[in-house]
Length: 639
Image (tube, rainbow, N blue to C red; front, side, top):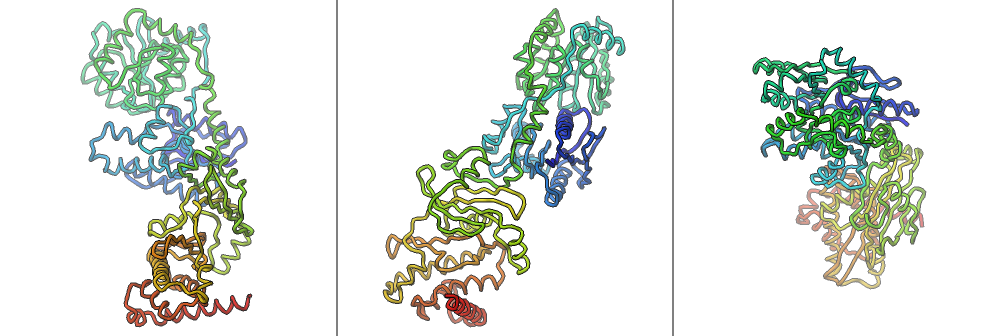
């Protein structure tokens, strides 16, 4: 399987970055081919993985993010991947691993109303909407169950698109003897005596994860406490502003900025407390790593993994909204007496769920199992959603297995009527037309109808133009190979008395009333006018594709059907308008229309006086007339 992984930036110690790196290694080990697309890479490359650095434009983060997404779209249009997996919010993904908080929620809570219209907020909200909206087909892997409700609140994302994973951490467990030996060696290496209280702060974004809150709490503490504390800051970020803060307020507590480290587990086994008062944190896997190493934690409830701290009784979780005074008091209380010892005891007795250590394997399992890359388009209305299988592949198989009365069947297309959940529907199933058919159409400069997508788009466009068409109830496209695409469209059955071809066959013998005929001509002209004004041409615009649902001569509906060859443009070329009108005129030859009926159609179609129509369009009308007569002669010769 050929996989594409996408991430904005890679650096060795970010949680999201480590998730991607581990998943890539597992995928390679299972025999898959993995390409990683990123704007920036720092660190070693995974063995067997192709890393592609994409050069982007833009002076801001949101500008570069948008440029990155647009360049990836061009790449993925040219290159075929079985799965496109994203670890940041990038449009066009098959699978999105959610390692970031909901931006819309953050905007609602933190930003003033006018800020949502600034480029940064607008861009990131747009990228998020493309992934989570109801129209998107991207499957979503969540590591924090609480985020599901947040995204559904803003985007009404369907339940079946969410899949849950446990936050993944490395399995490195030390026995009590090993932990004691590591503690002695590590404290000696960092020159921290056992009489000191060693506090760890581990993060790659100091501001977002609350380092300022920690320093403020230490500043507010009594000298008796601050002298005893040693704070070690571990992680990749700029520390200059925090060092300036320490100098400005003459804080006596020893604070070491250790930078990024490969010995986080050893540091955790040697320290007394982990502080993580994050302002925003989707998961916070550092809390799980701390629990594995029996290190008590002081954190905030915004962290997704804070629930594990509560469950294991391994520390304190502070409620939102955050209070600096509460945090300072909680830190002081935890450093007093024997409470840290009790927390350590609880963590030794707590058994971590094994799935935490297998998260990255489960991530690759989902990538292998989710058959999403091929199902590019998928729509089911509310009623059918209850009657059809939830899984997209099963739903497609179910539709193709339905049987009923066959109305039309050719090599690559079949139309049937079937009953689903007590209601009658028309189902048009498309199978791959093959490369021979595609090449044949290319050679004669025609566009082949490759599937139901063209008809689905046409129906939606006709609805906008206020033309009566069958109501779409379900639609899906399965496949990326143009020659093998399978698709279907399910429409509500139209109950009608006649198509106009059958209705008009009796007119030469039994003419209709003058009023009914004129009303019908006006309605047909109105459909043709609205369709052409909206930039659509039917390509099979005959009377047989107009269905009459008549309650009386004065009250009837006229539906346009068989839309799988409709072309949609801003403005249709003259030759395609001529094709539609000549086809309609050809199908009306011999049904008893008078010259005045034809003139009445023209007036209703152009919405102009007849004299002006002939003055401006005499040659065009002659062209339509000759084409219609040519079609009629061919039809007569054929039969």
